[in-house]
Length: 96
Image 1 (cartoon, helix red, strand yellow):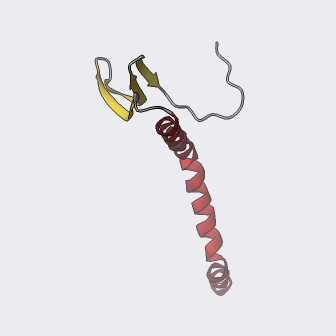
Image 2 (image 1 turned 45 degrees about the horizontal axis):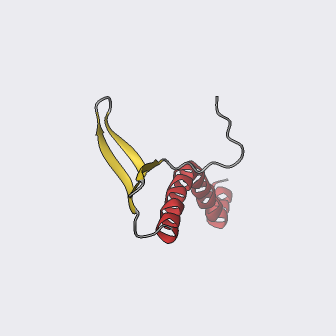
């Protein structure tokens, strides 16, 4: 009986590794999607905005309530300061 399991394991060990890898990929997918969305905003801002704009990415600022807060992008320009919070969602988004 043990030889059958030993033979199966030696033949199909890669399937176990594949299932573990897929599970880890699924667990990290929201994190990776968020990072990709932030990267895309950063690349587009640098590519399409003039030199009048200064882009600050992934800024951590002190907060009175929880200690710190994280802002994805701060865009400084002669026209004002713009705060950009990036969400990488697909589909319809309803408010309220």
